[in-house]
Amino acid sequence: MNTAVAYAPNRYHRVQMNTASLNYAPSKGCACSSLKGYSLNCITFRTATDFACGTGGFIISWLKALESQKKTVEDRAAFDTSVYGIEKKQFPYMLCVTNLLLHDIDTPRVYHDNSLLKDVLDYTEDDQFDVLLMNPPYGGSEKTEVKNHFPSDLASSETADLFMSVIMYRLKQNGRAAVILPDGFLFGTDNAKVAIKKKLMSEFNLHTVIRMPHSVFAPYTSITTNILFFDRTGSTKETWFYRLDMPDGYKNFSKTKPMKLEHFAPAVEWWSDRQEITIHGFDKAKKYTVEELAERSYNIDLCGFPHEEEEILPPRELIQQYQEKRASLNADIDRILEQITSILGIDSVEDLK
Image (cartoon, rainbow, N blue to C red):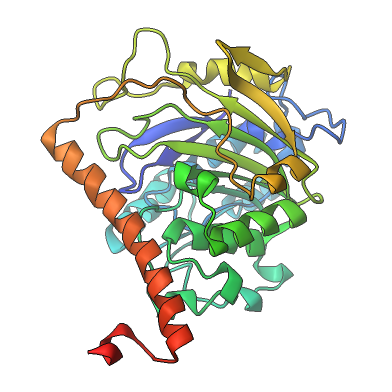
């Protein structure tokens, strides 16, 4: 099984994800439409991209998945250009370049830049990529000068939302993506989030959402996350949701007891033989039509975790949780203040003083 490595918002904690899952195409009848029996021949040397690549976990794993296909000099040349990354922070960027050099990429296509500081409407087909693997930063709040690079309806204050827009504008026709996002993206119904989800479902095929168990990225963040799998093969007709439960014997993941690839096995097994599952009256796996999702005002918080026990966190982790929640609330407050100042015809709240 081929794996990609996803980094938490601070980019140093790893959780493994199956890259083969990018190939699910339920309506296409493709030979590579399931996780089992996955053949790398379907994706030979297409360019995998991460616009917030941190130390390079995802793109390194993509290289490892393609390693066995290097047969000729031409293969070697294609392999060297099969990954592309951008990282805003200097230190992770330097580690990523070093990481790629250690994996025999002589000229790493990784750049020290901010993916959010270019007008998304200026992107052309030359700026698009075949495969996008991302765990974008979340919990952050972006300023107006960043949001100005996005259409007004997509100009969310939340960092993860803006990265989703970048991903949609830079995914090639027939390209595929796997993106890790927090629960807030699923249940959020503010104007920008709804617009982003509408665009996602009308222009892309959001075929699968995997609900991840809590504490996957512990101790670095307690935010619960999800993996969204989609491709640019047409609009969404239906979306499968699957809840990956905490494995037996675990109450929480931690630095000493992290999530392992084997813990993802139930999702892998379900992926190739999709069935709706209900346990004790709660949906664990279910398929929804796009019309049903629209009727919910694009609140796609489905197949979630029932009866979760309240967890008493250590003080340091509790403080971090509150800080992350405050950052999310600040983003909502900034958005509302912007709307109010716009209605009042003033430039900023400072003008009221």
